[in-house]
Amino acid sequence: MTGTSWARVPGSRTAERWLTRTGCRRVLAVVPHLTAGTRLTDVLPLLEADSRVQIAFSIPDGPDAWPGVDEYLRRSGCLVLPWHQARRMSFDLALASSHVGIDELEAPVMVLPHGTGGIRSRVSPQTTELRGHPRDLLVRDGRVVPETMVFAHEDDARRMCRAFPEAASRVVVAGDVCFDRMRASMPLRLRYRDAAGVEAHQKLVVISSTWSPHSLFGGNLDLVTRLATALRGPGYRVMAALHPLTWSAHGTRQVRAWLAEALDAGIRLLPPDEGWRAALVASDCVIGDHGSVTQYAAGLGKPVLLNPGSVLDVRKGSLADRLWKAAPVLDPALCLRSQVDALVAAGSRHRLSAIGKRITSMPGEAAVRLREEIYRILGMPEPDRPVCVAPVPLLTRESGT
Image (cartoon, rainbow, N blue to C red; front, top):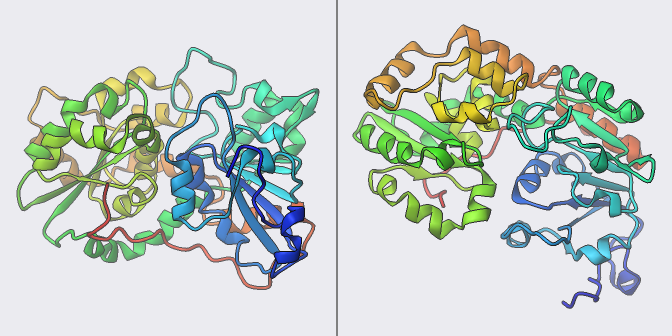
């Protein structure tokens, strides 16, 4: 397909005579990177089974693009439109987990978070009052671009309203559907452990790293290998969850080469799109940094040990900052196995329970509230079937990168 040709899909004039179902509301999922795509997969089941709705996907064009997004979407069986076509069509709703490209669309846009918290945990030279929501991403020619901005917690919504009062009427507090699904999975923990090949006598340690030079993987790569070596043996299983942007920016081959010694020591690398949630459910403890995965682990009640160098990235007042004040920090100079043994023996700490309460102010309600808002925008009655909070997919023994 050339840069000017149009795909024959609902909404394209050349496709109308070939359609099997007509008259559907058209929904566009905007996926600039893998992280946004994986977050939308939690929301799409709320409407994609509706025979009145047709969903298409598109990847925004731009001078910079993340590798692997098109392959990810097509592997999932998505109907993918070229961006030049998507921006010239009209849609009844656009779903986005990023602000990239949304001002170019002819559609009411619902923007969802793609991590924990309304303030990003990472500091940045481009600091604004509400990092992640600079004004030029929200306002174009004096108009607020999103129809709806979804937040998981009331505190984040209030912060948005204070920072951008002109957008206050667009703010919706709906909870965190990703966190709700993991919580719904917890009663099935033994099933997740069995599917992943974790034996009853083994302790599962998940190493989590977000992106950035101060992340665990970026600033302390040797620690991954040292942990894998220290925990080698029948008593422990070790899995590593790296941020999708780490895989996109550096490539699978390079990441695996950097971790060759850790792989030889038995560590298991989790896929970038799915698997980390199942691993958290099955885990006995998590060693991580300031990323959302570590915060979710604490919210689930998992014992957490923090990578010391990552504190340089932690933004004051963020959810990661709260976690840093409550969880123990690993000391790379001391025996790693002894620290992990002590962490597992101590179990979850009561002082981390506040993290889960700060992730969402509406636990278990996200799917219901999101579907309600989606169908409000579409101008349609919701389906008769009840909303289901589905457990996260199992991590099988074969899953890996």
